[in-house]
Amino acid sequence: MERVVGTVARGLRCPIINEGDSIEEIVVDSVLKASEVEGFALRDKDIVSITESVVARAQGNYATVDQIAKDIQTKFGDATIGVIFPILSRNRFSTCLKGIAKGAKKVVIMLSYPSDEVGNHLVDLDLLDEKGVNPWTDTLSEEEFRKHFGHIKHAFTGVDYIEYYKSIVEACGVPCEVIFSNHPRTILDYTKHVLACDIHTRFRTKRILKENGGEVIYSLDDILAEPVDGSGCNEVFGLLGSNKATEDSVKLFPRDCQPIVDRIHNMLKEKTGKHVEVMVYGDGAFKDPAGKIWELADPVVSPAFTPGLEGTPNEIKLKYLADNNFSDLRGEELQEAIAAFIDNKEEDLVGAMESQGTTPRKLTDLIGSLSDLTSGSGDKGTPIVYIQGYFDNYTN
Image 1 (cartoon, rainbow, N blue to C red):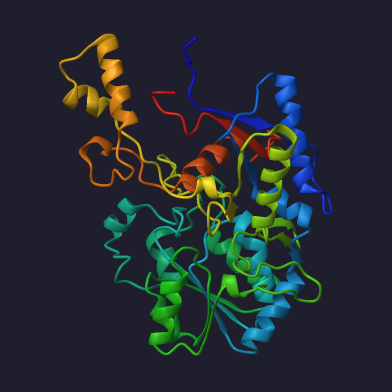
Image 2 (image 1 turned 90 degrees about the vertical axis):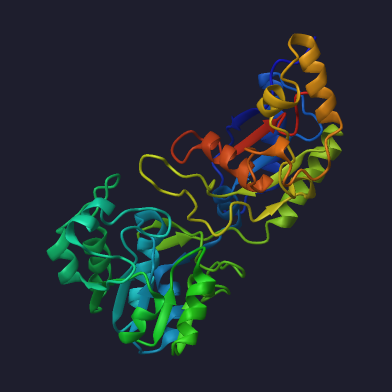
């Protein structure tokens, strides 16, 4: 019978994963059990995606605020630290800020506005217009910000992040000043010692700071890039991608993930004979149209994946073919013409009219978004996602 279903994504339940567990064995056992219980067969080019959180948990990749503080103290000494462009997040940054404050003598927090890097708004754009404030030219003190906009709480969390972040620093016995600017060099009027806390723009930020007289410049990926007093670490991303674990510790982004995905691939091949692609995924990199939040607080969507997930889609837009190339055809004749076109499509469709409107994103970013939405971020209990039919097209 002709297939009538394309891509299917299944969130797989598995045991609660703790430090020291074999993530490879748990993933493979969970996939095989789900296949048996739910009655689906594994196929070549299926995909297993594993959320980064459970990989880091199995690795025991954690750090305390005191370990963060020690690394900060080692790098910055007794200087005032400019903490610039942090995202507004209790989960992602508040515990990191506590560690930073415990390692500092004074902190100047510089927030971007009207929103942070991933779209969390401090102030509405229309309110900026109403008050005649230009975020690209105007630097505001906390007093000036309050005078213009008052005390605004985040629409989703109900938190006044200006007050919240300042209170975290001051609770550590450290003086804190908050300013607002979108220009990295603004912070150099307050201190030459700066910790850039932005994620995807950090290399540009550090370059601008160094070119304009910054003396000691680090970013979050430099903090805990190696162990401190027995802590976890991430050699590539440091504190980037970390999440709050407890009030005094963070779970770091997982490290050395490539051997993990390769082992899972090989174990499934050995047990089933099927060539299954494997990836570790974090945030899915999609934007919420209502809240305007860009869901990518992790430094990358996927820190590791098997070779079959390299590249970008090379797809034809079916409706373009139906409306243009084969507009005179109908029914089975149209289906056959489109199938033949797909079978003979070029290996690289960049610039081709037939591919316009298809998604020009990396496969791992697309699959990461699908996985993140499938597993959710709450209590679904499905940190493993099994995807079938992703590489199918109209001819399969």
